[in-house]
Length: 438
Image (tube, rainbow, N blue to C red):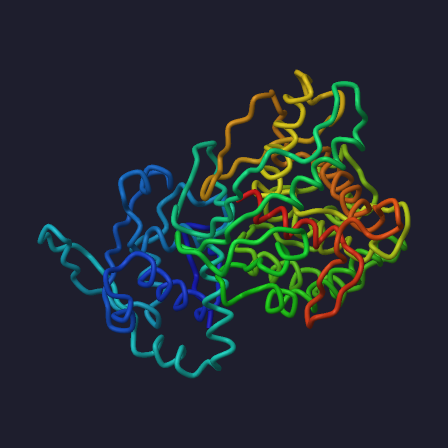
């Protein structure tokens, strides 16, 4: 039940995911989304780079769908080849497609077999596949070239009203003073969650309310639902991370567990990767738990999630650093706010106070944002991954420990799935920042 894409070195995905992607493409980019079962889609095969296809307005096509299914290394190459159609006869049936200008071009529609497969899936499985397909649109879209890629500029947007910060450090203040000001600013800055440019709920403020309002990749996948899906992956990734931290040697079963866990994390966040091997996973997790800034292990907007999940167990250890998923959203949130605070304090370079805090390319929502200072590039840099994780660990500690003159907490405790509350975690801080930076 797999779909093979030959031009991506025979990369494979579940057939259910491809049917879900077809349905999502009709929902997003077709005039009548209800036509998806019998509707037709142009193949529009092309060897143009992904950003150029999008600049030309090509979104509703099999070519673009395939480009978003495959790992980033292949996204600037033709994917919807004749060989691809021939290798997947159970999924597609070639048909003519009438373009808006009346031209007849090559197209495809889903086969009865593919529709039967979809109908036989449970509603829970269908909904998960739809979420995974939607995540391909909402995720950081990486390619092997630096051009910005925006699949859907009407996606998730969380835009604050940008009040003036309640605390502004002085020129010679410490790093901690800036982080204190950063936490306080996010606490007071209101924002309105939006989806496809429409409000989702009311405008809110406060760290706890921001967290409760998050969703990924669509409003029906809110904080509780995402927590439920993430829980088994956090548990299994934690076993991997703790085993490496304890110096255990991986067995064959450990390697199978690692590969399956990593692929499911990539699926959840819409960031498919190639070379998902036990050796690569072990290298990434080892670099994370050992805080190896010089590591040559893989790192991008996908592998950073592996580092984050596999080190979540370090929340139970003092003086250890659970990792953040340092993608373009988190980087944009942190850097745009620190940039403003530093400029207001008369600091002309972030290097002394925040070395290795670096940018990650990303477009969509309110990204990219204009910065006044010269921030280094942190993309695929373990030094930035570790520096960002330490910064968020400091933010977590401020949220958990700061009190007023009477000993009362300055910030509300972290909401937990199901309604309880507890201590803030790096993962909780990260989820707030991910929406703040979009």
